[in-house]
Image (cartoon, rainbow, N blue to C red; front, side):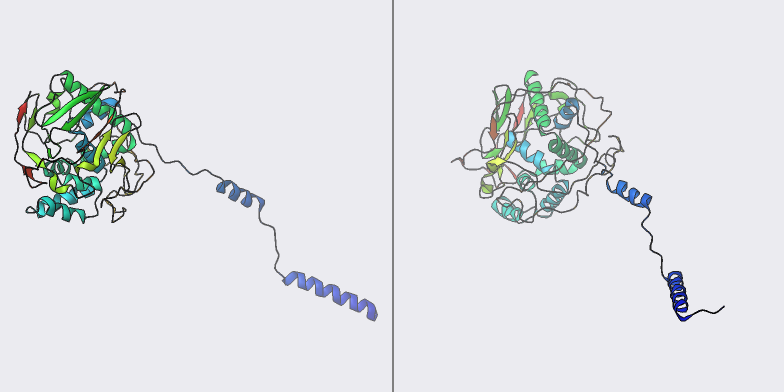
Length: 366
């Protein structure tokens, strides 16, 4: 068969096209089901962090019982400092390693440290700092509770004070004054320059058998239902530091809380962790870790040097179950005025070097 020139050109073109198609890559649209799966996956909601379990009034009463009868400003310092257990350990070791530092010299060295103002303030009261270090798990639980439930902690402290009053074991003494304002029990030092830390047995002083927090190591030596006072702490040499006694207080009013430097105290450390499965041999019912290790130092180096700490947000996770000790499930609801620690600087002289025990009258008061 003869093929003319025109037909030959058409045949050659067709063969070329077929060859080109045979050797070129084939582009196919993406699989619809794959795109759909990707779309569904990208829209899946992020799992929410578990919310901390709330402690009951009875559990909080048990938790605050060892410090509820301390002067208001000291309670504020302890509650704030308990959020920083690593710093408490550091401060306690610092005092142990520098036993000769006292008064203004101690304050100057403490002021150089990158601790929270509350931890610095507690160096004025070495026995208190040592007790918090000794019972570090309880201290940490106290910090968690105050961070997550500040109003409930406030109620628990007032409830325990009322119980001690009703039992006849909390009243004014030469070392401290106890007043009631609108149902709020306020405890302040009788002399704003000499602070006495009362010693008492929580299982006896409240008039009913309240149990100790699991794993708590008692630090008191009293054997009856009364307050005992040793020597006072002279705080005059610390007045030049912004974190000293006079900067602290407690606003017992609704929506109140810890006071520092003339305003509301705010936490500034982001280094917290959930200890639910860590302390007490899993006593509190295990929960997944929800925070970074609390030993991480993620706060500002300048924190605590005469300035209020910066704000932080978030929730410190907590959980609890199984407490069966004594207590009362009712919460305190009638709150009153605020209480500041040192008030205005007094003209009286301190009877000691500050930060160490100074002379003063002690004794026990029934």
